[in-house]
Length: 266
Image 1: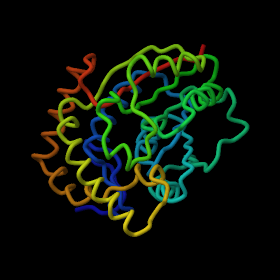
Image 2 (image 1 turned 90 degrees about the vertical axis):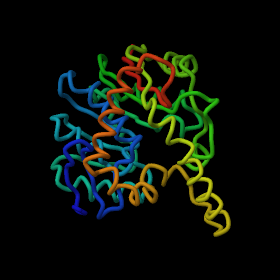
Image 3 (image 1 turned 60 degrees about the horizontal axis):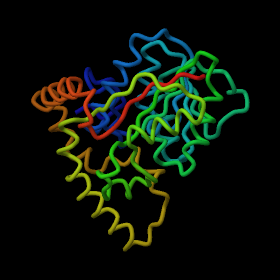
Image 4 (image 1 turned 60 degrees about the vertical axis):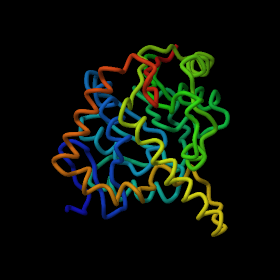
């Protein structure tokens, strides 16, 4: 198995040496993100909350001029190592004052639910867009699906279609494309992940480890690393390709576990 940072033919960036592999949910979300971005004109792009940096590394290879923001120190260091072979891709620890009106695209995947004042965050992201720029983001869907994995990750909420529309429109964004992703595979995986995260939460509580969960949720691949040999096998890749096709078929139904949205600056 290749443990160094490399490009998998279907999963994109993999970096076992840095403790990061693409989880199935990430793989399916990435497929829909790439499908959304592929037809767009290449331009300047900012990914907010880039985590381990795998996706922004892939987008840089697609021809976008990429910048990233990651405020978690551990994740940021991993991202810088993973993206070291992408010249010009800068990963910042804080927003810069010269970002106002600078970017064609601002991306934020599985970030908004971590922020208590989500409207203020959306307003800030809007301010970084050029007048005709687009915000592309994903969030976990359906409050009734709240589980221990949300607690583990440090989420404040899961969204309904209406609540997400309200936040974005109040921030001065016009919602365009809106789809769900993840059905049916992630619906089946969520209970397993909840059991794993419940155990991790109990272990952390017993150890007195009260570190901010959000800083680790995007880079913790403890379970996924153990399962990755199966996932990356010929059979595993085939199953994920089939599931990616199924989620595409059902993307306009309220069956998936997350929303993927494109909104334009008004």
